Amino acid sequence: MSVNPPFPPTPTTHISPIVISETQRLATAWCASFAANSPPALSSIFTPDGEWIDHGFNIRRRGRSALETHYSLWMRANPDFTATITQFWPNETGGVIKYVGKGTMTGDLPSEKARGNAFEMVGLVEFVVRKEAGEGWLIEKIEELYRRDFWNSKKEEEYHFISKL
Image (cartoon, rainbow, N blue to C red; front, side, top):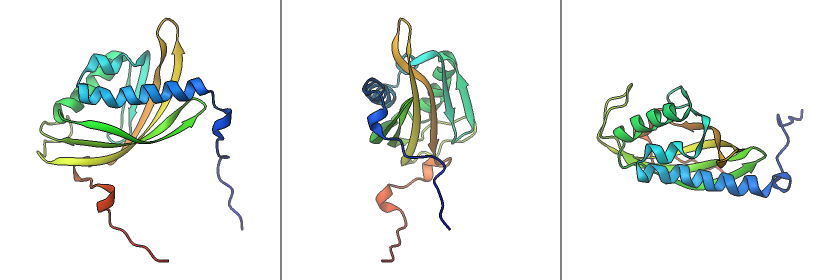
C-alpha cells in the first residue's frame, strides 16, 4: 500500500522573491518586537485588519488594537521574553518560522498564574503577508503554535531521546 502526501511539496523557485524577503523582514520584526516590549512596534507590522491566532491558548485576535492587547498581556506576564528565528520555510503567501522563545513568567496571564521560573520554548508561526496600499508589505495573519504549558518546556537538547539504528 502506498500513501500519498495530502499535498505536493512547494518548490521555492515558484515563490516570488519579494514575498520571501518581505516575509523574512516581517518575521524578524515580529521577533524583535518582543525584545523592544513595544505594542505599537508590534501592531505597526500588521495590516489594519491583521489577525493573530494563538493555538496555544485558543485565542483569535483581529485588528491592531486587539493585537496590542494580546501582546501586552503576554509581555506583562513575561517581560523579558525574546524570540529568535532558527528556521524559515517560504511559501506562496508568506512562510513559516521556527523560533526559540526565552523568558521568565513573573506575571499572571488571564488564565494562568505566574510561575516565576525561566523557560525556553519552541514555537512555529505561519505568516501570511500582503502589500497594503500606502503602507507597504505587512502581516495579514499569523498562526502561532507552541506548548500550552510553555513554562514546563525544555531546551531541545534536553528532550528525552531514543535512537534505535
